[in-house]
Image 1 (spheres, rainbow, N blue to C red):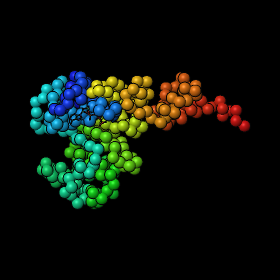
Image 2 (image 1 turned 180 degrees about the horizontal axis):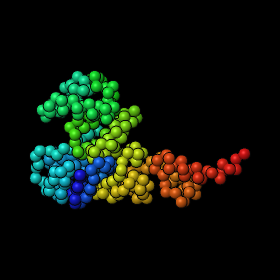
Image 3 (image 1 turned 60 degrees about the vertical axis):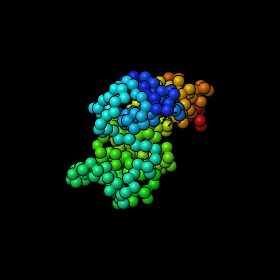
Image 4 (image 1 turned 90 degrees about the horizontal axis):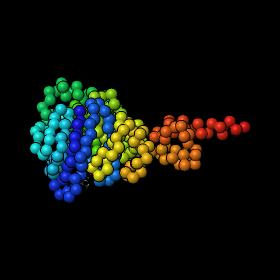
Length: 288
Ligand SMILES: Nc1ncnc2c1ncn2[C@@H]1O[C@H](COP(=O)(O)OP(=O)(O)OP(=O)(O)O)[C@@H](O)[C@H]1O
């Protein structure tokens, strides 16, 4: 579904490549998280997959990019853009500003494409149901919270029925309630066929959601595995990627020989609880 092979990309004003000999293959339906330090190339990777770089940004791309059935090599411009949706940080900038209700906002892109009315209604109803937007459909989009707006942006992209959805730090400008709403929406996509690439520094939520996590460093993929393997990897410390609270707690415990050596480090609460329960079991028996 997404096949990047030996991709290097340099911005028009860049002296160094933002992506360097990067290869990445994401099968259909997978949720692939992308993490890495500032400037490691996450947004650039999102832009290449979403056909923004170099088509919109300019710059030089080498290697081959195949996304959602369309492929390119080199810098040749392509028409039309592939069916890839891109969700960015700030929902405010992605809404049309021209519509009075959420339902109208969801219809905006479809109207522009001249999608027949019955088909439009079918797609909007499906996405409203999928994302649980029912309560919001008659509300004015700009009166919603940031998290609700981001859900509407995700919805307005999903009604276009993309095969690939790229999200570049979609929660970075949201409060905790907004973050929860967006992750709820993304969880709803797990049963959908859409392939998701999610640039996200919230590792705990990523660990719960993603099938796989890729770590970038200076434009290269340096780690690529299931979330638990990546987020407990010893090399993570030097790559500007946070660990979850549970991994941090278990690492501290392990340093004091208080984590069962037979258990891998945890990433989420259930695994952490299991490990600490094992450590505490003898103590419990000693209690009166
Ligand atoms: N429009 C641009 N023009 C020139 N250089 C750019 C441009 N955008 C990004 N870069 C450079 O490309 C490299 C990768 O940047 P990118 O934004 O992809 O990293 P990132 O991992 O998304 O960083 P952050 O977490 O800070 O958003 C950096 O060195 C950055 O300075």
